[in-house]
Amino acid sequence: MKAAPRPCSIADTLSLVGEKYALLVLREVSLGVHRFDRIARNTGAPRDILTARLKRLVEAGILERVPYSERPQRFEYRATPAGEELQPVLLTLMAWGDRHLNENDRPVVLEHDCGEILSPRVVCAHCGGEADRPSLRAHVRAPGWTTSGPDEA
Image 1 (cartoon, rainbow, N blue to C red):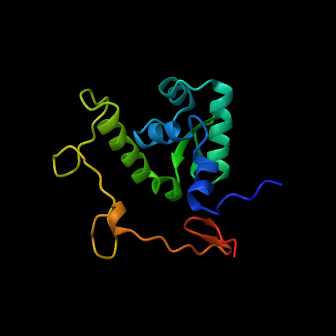
Image 2 (cartoon, rainbow, N blue to C red; image 1 turned 90 degrees about the vertical axis):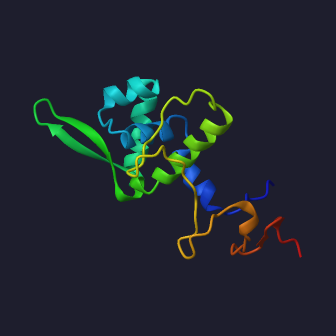
């Protein structure tokens, strides 16, 4: 019998947004693209796959369907507060891709209100210190698990 994987909020989140095109849908919505046809065009997602992704994101409370036409009845997609909270994930993924995949030819840049090109960082809300690997220590709270895996004692 296969052992159960580590309980993890990353895995739980990926079960919602880790499917192909899900994060690209969120990218489009965050850029102000809300209608199905434009999301399909900008992501390259096949219509049936996009329909399934949008349905899943709506069911998960990440997006909401908002009517924009009565006749014919048509809907657009807007981020919920939970969906808005995924913006930092998109920004850090984009920054990683800019550094490691598109260093000399960034396809999109975001300008911050301060007038500079955004360079996102993850910081501690308590002290403002950067949340980099050396500054973090994991405390596993899942019963029967340690940082290295299942507690076999």
